[in-house]
Length: 153
Image 1 (spheres, one colour):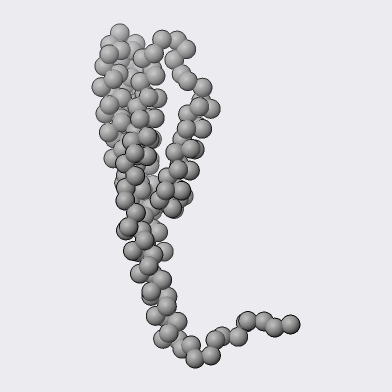
Image 2 (cartoon, one colour):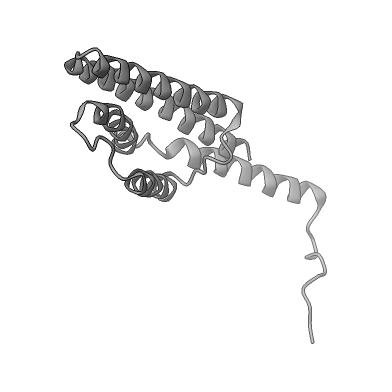
């Protein structure tokens, strides 16, 4: 039996370094060629805004939690397929944006509950619109951070 464990003849350390350098340049170029999927980011924003706005709906107010989980998983799978990024590796800036998004969403949800309790349910639409914009902005920060991690290798 034959094996291919021997290094190819004629390959020097300089050649190997040049090949690795070309690979790093290709990785950076590929990560820069991918545009921002604004439709998917809008999907995340819309999902979060609908979650906030559901407070103003008559009872039963909440959609089934399984529905929200399935939609989020579907959006994340589409984002991974479209962009090739994983949010498990998004760097410190992306993690900070994610934590900020969670905190701001909970604050928005609490404000919406307070508005409904004060019989100002129409103002929940304003809170949901603000949360939509915040979600889109922070999701784009998370995406760009993940792309930077990919381009660095």
